[in-house]
Image (cartoon, rainbow, N blue to C red; front, side, top):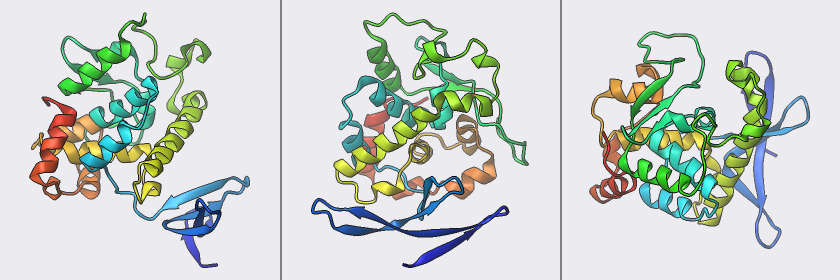
Length: 260
């Protein structure tokens, strides 16, 4: 079996080819993935292409395949805000201001400040597209909500000091959600016929936001702020929006609605 060596500062890992079973039970090689085993015996996978993003037709196939209202709104939140999955999971109802049409992401990725730093490690607030406001209103319709409640977490299972915990300490309260949403994304993409479904994770929806929003926001600094990126990282990971055809741009505009 062909093996790929992947070295890190701490250890040298051996990654094997990844196979799936087809409908007839035959092993089929998945070219874009490798799989390995951690020291604790758990499997992990590595994608060859981590820069994949949704084209509008692919997004519509995926999002229309989800029937669960909360699951659907979670993925809609990702594509409309560019939030990291942990940032979205830690959103409260009070963080979405329907009247002003804004969102505030308060729990953000924590890292050391770098040169050309744009609001990394700090809360960030910005305008959201009109269709997201409509989706949120639909999501909470006929529900009694507490503005202090988290939208996607089980509030009844969170400790009283949850807000005082750092990011690492919070993880155990939402890790299962991360895994569930990641698996759901891949299952649905595979079901609707996206051939390289294995190249997607929830983080690729964040990449989709970055690519789509370049059609609307010409100021790279503003887009970096909204995504909580520094300029160097943004330029390294996001290509030109010119890759979208005029028809695709119109579909993106239809999906997002009015963008401020």
